[in-house]
Amino acid sequence: MTRRATPRRAAAFLLLAITPSLGAAESRHGRAEAIDGDSLRLAGEEMRLHGIDAPEWHQSCTRDGRGNACGVAARDALAALLAAGPVTCHWEERDAYGRALATCLRGAENLNAALVAQGHALAYRRYSTAYVAEEDAARRARRGVWAGSFEAPAAWRARERRETPAAGSAGCPVKGNVNRAGERIYHEHGTPGWRQVRIRPAQGDRCFDDAAQARAAGFRAPRGGGRR
Image (cartoon, rainbow, N blue to C red; front, side):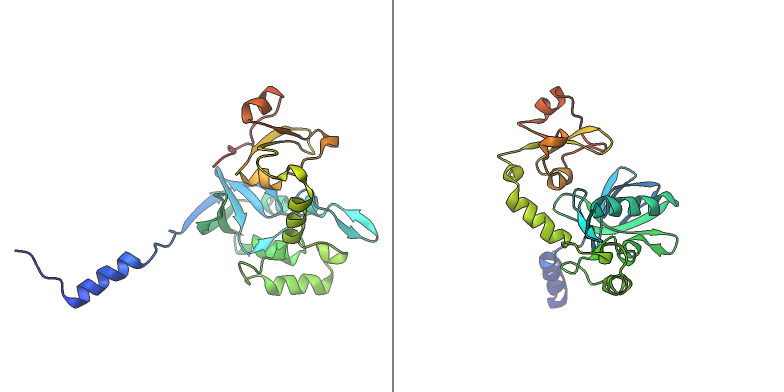
């Protein structure tokens, strides 16, 4: 015998059918390594620190009338926090590049908040207002980037995309980057590394048609894999 659905049961079924599923909460624990000022790798998982935006690796700021490698300083600040001990990172969603959008803690210390409080990252107000108070305090105390002048990381990225002819996938589908350690690493279009790298021929960076061409030229894939 077929049971007739009651109005309440039918309404519940309809609600389940039209409500999008939320991402399940996930977490990782252990030693992590900094990728740049607001992203890291933990237990094989690449993560973007949620709610903050740090200067990009190649970005420069100004302090005391001189150029300041604020992107490198941001990465070093995150590396120092991670070197202090294992961390636990929690997330419920991922960004367009497949990275976990994580909040990372070492004990009771929130590393996302710490980077903003040190002035090495901004509160990413477009996506969250969780760290506005830390940004305001860093600005008042003139810590980190606030000790001089700088361009907001999001604005810097937008300008780089406009001004770099090879930024489009058709012009540079695979970017070969020589990093500060002299390592030759290639990044395929659609990966987080590709978005971050600015081609600078003077330091050995190159564009390739595909990954095989990059490997033939002595470049390797990024650790942990490239394309997601």
